[in-house]
Image 1 (cartoon, rainbow, N blue to C red):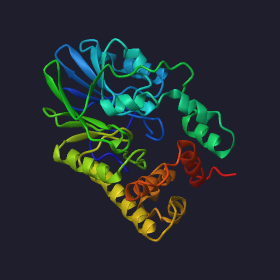
Image 2: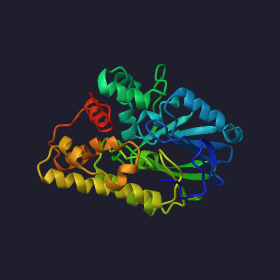
Image 3: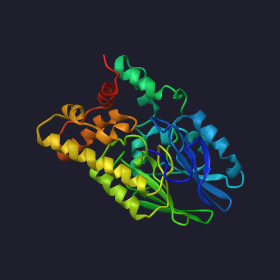
Length: 316
């Protein structure tokens, strides 16, 4: 899927409006995430850092033409996946804002989990090295939020209003978006994957669908996803469409008595087969099953990666 706006999907800083920029990192697959910059009089707010220190330093250098006059004073981490906060240490002098749910999850979502995956033998380790190999997790100093909120927080960025709204749990325990009403720009974090398969680590998926509806209700003109090109509000509908589809497909198989693993293999991706990361259906089916049956035993992350690796051709 391609951008529905005039903004090309090329690496680097893109000026969207008077007060809003996007830092885009193609190709948007595992770990290659976007960030945002909101400016006001004499300061700016950064939406997310990147997956490692080198990538984040490159981004900060690339933003310097703007941040020399509008230094970054505030960072918002949209959620607790490392590709949106592992670079925080370079901005340790700033106020770092996250929802309380995200702050809590950061404590258990540091680089050790990924290092463990990278060190595994067999297909799971091979898959992990395939998707995470380009990044350097060796010396990351986890730098967590210094200010938290529960549902919504409005901040002034040198006179530019930014609304930070927690719409999770959905993709993770806490999923915050940043909306700049004056410019009609919405930064969504990983509530939106454009061109890639959404993944519901936490769910429920029904809440993610509701989050899409709330984002649409903001009536944004430009939408910066966590991964993929800048789009307009139609991009939100694309993601919502996938979520309702996987909800229906998994529910049908749950009612037939299939296990989650049987269901993930039985579902025909159809028009969604063109999306990257097709193996994420493994976790998305689980998210639907957990919602349908809260007593279902949770599958650990290593097993989820094994199933995704298998679906994407990394098998014994």
